[in-house]
Image (cartoon, rainbow over all chains, first blue to last red; front, top):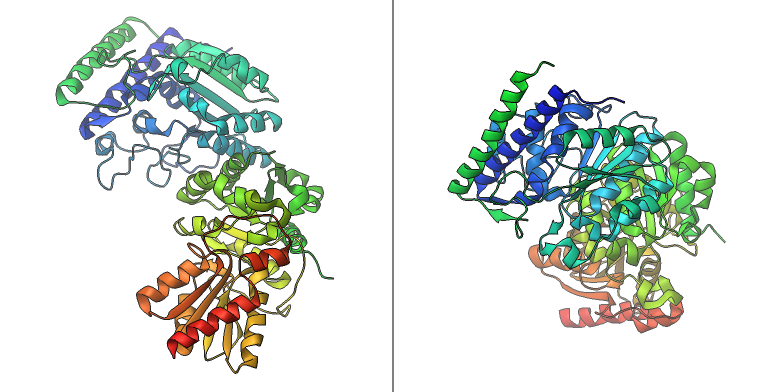
Length: 290
Length: 312
């Protein structure tokens, strides 16, 4: 099994903090955004774009690339930060988020942003899109894989489960999903609104391989991903245990942080906290040899 | 007896699939109704039955399209439109993909499936989707031709497909173009603009009835409802000074709405609209429903007479 070295693991943790920092800068530049769900997928997007995915930022339409479907499309800013860090477009562009005429809309649009594989924003639809893409790739014997990112609140949508049934029936082992179980949706805690129950056993009973992992622990996420990528004959999902708003004390684990305004003082506070962690990770990295 | 329209649909897809390996067919547990089983048998690898999940079908079709396939996905018109509207709007059209969505059993042809299955609103909903092409063939020849054109068109298309029964109004060699209506009969007094299997023949019959009274009615087959053939509508409105639209659909939003919007803005012309007058569907025979929703040739002729009376 391909286990991350301690050095690589720290590098990826630092990449996740950079994604947090740049996402917050982008959201801060337009004054408000889906901070909670953006911060909870920082480790996942770092792992995918820095370690797992096959792509060429100079050739975003490369047919041989892996596809990413951010079905929780409102968390575009986290993906944009990951794409900019991966070299798809200049970092400065992140600060155009949601501005008039911007190529970075709050919800993903593949015709606007280099590196976005499909548009999302109406919850549930990404699941079917990802399954259709995986099916199309399989039918032409492509080695590309489809990475689907779902929200936990999004699993209220019936369409998710329609697609989940379909993907198992079609044995789409080139489809790997992640569900960001940050335990909150817009109106409150998922448990109080419409309990999702045991998602792992639900996906398993629908015919998927399902693995639980700490969504903020790069090593656990990496190992779960590797295990699912080795799976044949069925799709797989990582049930990610995460914290909504993870990584900035202003929102970390707090209720009501789905979409919030960000003042320049708050942005400064977030910037300080995250930069401090980046410096500490850099110091640790300097202390060990790869 | 000629081929059922649905068989023309399937045969045309089989023909296209021979030379184009991107053509694929999706069903949501209505293969036996749409009649695409022959496609499944010929190309099992390009046929996907997603089960009773229309929204998922449109999403899967969109995903396949993003990987270069040309999917034809079908359901009853009510479900193809109302039940998948957000998916077709966003996953297929906003994403600028190439999904051919087929809504069968238009309007009263849903007959004994009744109000739950009787689409009087599908075209109106679809017209709201930017750049979408909407077609409604009226016979075997135009069905084959328009399905071929839909496959060739780069972009999504909504195909309002009659299912059971056959009729041939066109010569086999007739050429068609998306967005170009056909003049079935020329006339100088009133223009009857119709679409689809039920209403085009009723409009032709109405023109015969009017002819007996010395009224020369032109009949246009508006097989593409969007983009509307504005040039043709305006030229006939100019020539005849009176227009009646004939659709197996609500009079709002669809063909009648499209023509009224055009004329209202560019060439105010007295017009009438034949179609369901803000009514839900119901069960019944075709004859009963034609009468109940006042879609018969007699109703069209009467509407024409009234407009001409107002004009004089």
